[in-house]
Image (tube, rainbow, N blue to C red; front, side, top):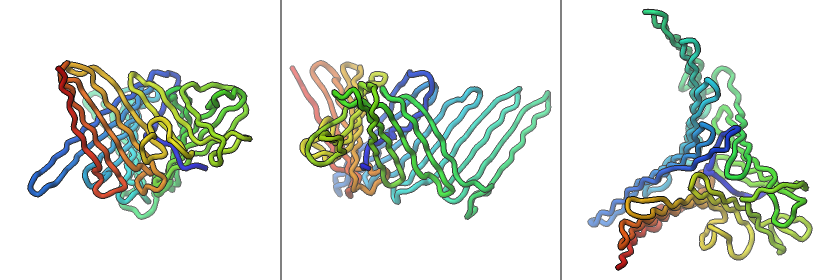
Length: 361
């Protein structure tokens, strides 16, 4: 078992069905304040990433300031037939732990609206069901509540729930199982099958990625079958380490694809020597990057953000650092850019801020 590979971002969380239409969008809103007397630096940064597929939207919201990682929230919204569904999962980062999970559902049938809200906080659950409708001049609403906020024990004999989801991501079909107990979030597991080995057509790999609140595990399982998954990279070596198949050892795995003009790269590497791809030159052994080039007001706009992981990190999901860069060509003679590096395992979190500009004539 190897500690590994996100969501990642969460990524990171997803849900989809027959359609393969996918979009990857987001925003990075950062304000940096510097005061000269006394010298002080302040950061307010919010990163929002949304993966949309088949009418469903999965959003990760990360909030960071100069003191560290403040909050992490995952939101899901979509429809199943006539039902509208939504879910919000929130984690605290100091201390690391589960905060709350809320699920909402709605249905309009024959002029009657039904709404339900399920809320889980550690050790306590509540369920509220509301039905409302009108008949001529008569309005009727029924509100039923199960459980009582603040109870020390689970209500209405709630023991737990497992949610199984299948969805496409990049070139892979992913199956996900998310589990909750009375105390809250337990784990989420992502499974991918039929990852092709380069040059070995008779063998494929299966990958199972498990996230708990304070760590994650990656298990690679061989499957001697035929199949191709073109956007995966598998790093092989002969020296000691990795996972042994005769004289062949697997020391890393990577995924790269483009979703709606946005490039996604995820790489895990536990081998020795130089690190491949986006891990090169970093202290991370696993990282995920989103990058894009788009049209700005006057010229090209380039943006990339990388989230890195270290096994020794005490942060939520073992996230260790964030590196982000952007540049925009304001005119043919002037290009402006900025970079930001955050070390979530250090205090202060802020590691480096760069401003750059290029004047050409």
